[in-house]
Image: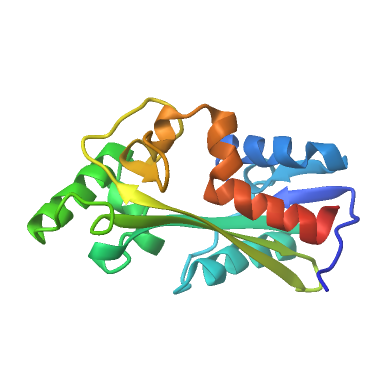
Length: 204
């Protein structure tokens, strides 16, 4: 049985204002005051885990220990089957030092071309992952894992979303996630699914 969240305040373990705002809007129905690790000046821990679950847990525990408040962290990424699951945990690193998603998308395409991967749904299968870890000051942690299956497309299409959305076409869709409205994307996205699992387990 998952632990219920009843505290009035929650730290979101991120220094990304956009991500903190997204989480704030998703949890607004539950009357929880959201503050970010960035707002509190908390340091970002080294992400030394070997799975999304481990990295999300590391970040959540670091934030709850530093703040004395419950903390929520996410770790997410894109795994491409033909690239042995890369970029995976290193999705952001593939964007280079400037964190330019187009750099990462081009690197995926170049790697697929180098390996001679054909342009078919099965050959270019990919999955977006999002793990959310909710930690309490006593070190109790609840984790959920949301996924979205699809394929890599090239060239990128669409101007919505962020990150690798323009080169990702969800299974059963003709559009990329960057060609969808925010509401359409959130209804099926890995992060949206993870949040619904978390809300069901700990907030409702």
